[in-house]
Length: 387
Ligand code: DIG
Ligand code: MN
Ligand code: MN
Image 1 (cartoon, protein in one colour):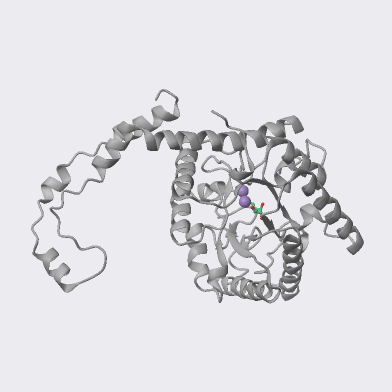
Image 2 (tube, helix red, strand yellow):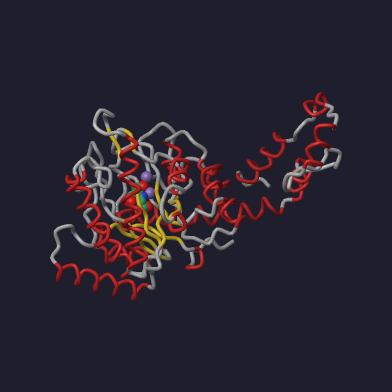
C-alpha cells in the first residue's frame, strides 16, 4: 500500500508548525529559526500540498513596505519552485503586547481599532498569496478575572469586528470565507467562544453568517473534555466545516499540538473515517509541531508522520467499510422490522394520532442485546492489524 502524500490529499502545514523553534514556557528555543522560504522548501521535500501563515510568520510586524514586498516576492518564488499553494491565512492577534488584553474584545478602543487595521492588512496579504479561507483564533480574547469585562459586551465587540470584516471582504471583492477556531483556555485564563458549539451559535447572530464557518482543532475540543468528532460532525452537518486543524492531545493537559494520531489513534481513525465517508474536500491542515527534542530532520519526521498516519487511517477506514462481518453488524444494528408507526419526515395529525394509539412492548425494547462489544472489538483488531 502506498502512503506517499500527494497534492490530491490536500495536506497543509502552517509556517509556524515546521518553523516552531521549540520554545516553551519553561525553556529556550532548541532549534535555529528558519525563513518562510526554507519552510516552504522543507514542506515541498516532505510532500505537503500547501502552506498557511499568520501575517507575522511571513512579514515581521515592524517590516517596512519595501521589506514586505521583497519578502512576499521571495515567498511567492518559493511557492512557484515547489508547487505549494496557500489555502489559508490568519492574523497574529495574540503575540504582540498590544494584544495582552485581547484584540477585538480589548477594553481599549485603540487596541480594538489597531486589531481591525492589522486584520484588514493581513486579509489583503493572505488573498494576495491565494488564500480562500481566513481563520480567526481569538487566543487573547478572554479574561483571567471576570471583574475586567462583561462577557456579553465582549461577544458584542467580537460580533461588530467580524461584521465589519465580512463587509470589508465583500467590498474588496475577495473570494474568502472566514473560519472561527475555538479554544477553551490558554494563553488566557478563559477564552471566549470556547468550543465548536459556542462558535456555531455565535455565527448565527452575525450579519453575514453564510460567510463564516468553523476551523475546529483536535487539541482544543479535547482540552475542553469533549469528543472532537462530534463537534466536527455537527459543524459539517450545519455546512460550516470550512477548515480543520489536525493534531493530537492528551486530555487535561496544556495545548500539546502533537503529531496527528500520536496520542489516540482510535479517535484519529474515527475522525479520518468520518471526513472520508462524508467526502470532506477541504484542506487537511496539521496545526502541530515536533517534540522539543527534535532537530530539523526530526521536524521532517514529524511532518511525514502526520501525513502517513492520516493515509494509513484512510486505508483502515476503507477496510472497515469493506469488512463483511463489520458490515453485517452495522446492518443488524440499524435493522427496522417496520413494526413501529412511521412518523419521521414531517408532522401530520394522522401520524401523531397513530403514534399515540400504538402499544409498545417496552420490556422487549429494553431487553434487546446490541452487539457493540463485538463491533468495537473488530474495529480495534482492524486497527491493531490482525484483521
Ligand atoms: C492555534 O491553534 C491557532 C493559531 O495557530 C492559528 O491562528 C490557527 C490557525 O490554524 N490555529
Ligand atoms: Mn492548538
Ligand atoms: Mn489551530
